[in-house]
Picture 1 (cartoon, rainbow, N blue to C red):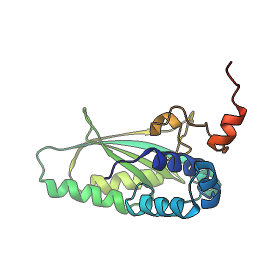
Picture 2 (picture 1 turned 135 degrees about the vertical axis):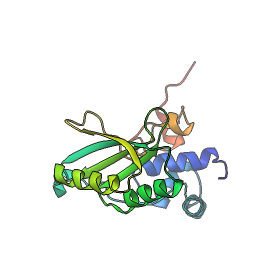
Picture 3 (picture 1 turned 30 degrees about the horizontal axis):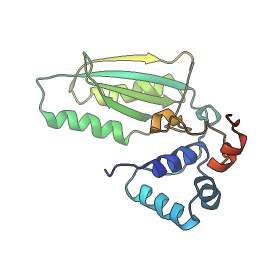
Length: 184
C-alpha cells in the first residue's frame, strides 16, 4: 500500500469524524481545490484505505442483544483443509462479526452478535461438527463498558497528526490561526 502523506491523513481524520462532509467543505478546511480533494478521496477508495461508508446501526434496535466471544483451539493433528472449512463456515455465518487469528493458547477469537443464546449454541454445534477443534471457550458479554467500532472518529495521534484539530473542530488552519493567541 502506498504511503499516506499529511494531506491524505488530514482527509481521513476529517472523514472519520463526518463521512458525509462535502468535498467543498474539506477543500476549504485543507486549503485545496474541491477537485484535488475529490481526486484524493477517490484514490484513497481505490487503494482500499477508505473501505466504505455506512450507517452505524445500534444492534439492540434490531433485537441483537446477545454478544459473545468464542475462543477456538484447532487440533494440530488435523489437515489444514479442515481449518479452512471452519473459517469458511465462520465467514458465511451472519452472526460472526469478527475473526482474529491470535497468539497464545487459542488459535482464533470470534466475535458474535445474536438475538438468543441458542443462536450462539447452533453456531458452536456447526463448527464443532467439522471435528477440527480441540477446544472452544465462550464468554458472553454482560455489559459493554466501552465500544469504539471501526476507527472513526479517529484521534489525530492515530494518524500521525498530533498537532491537528480535535474531533468536531472543522475550522481550517487559517481560522485556527486567527483564534490562536499572539505571542509578543
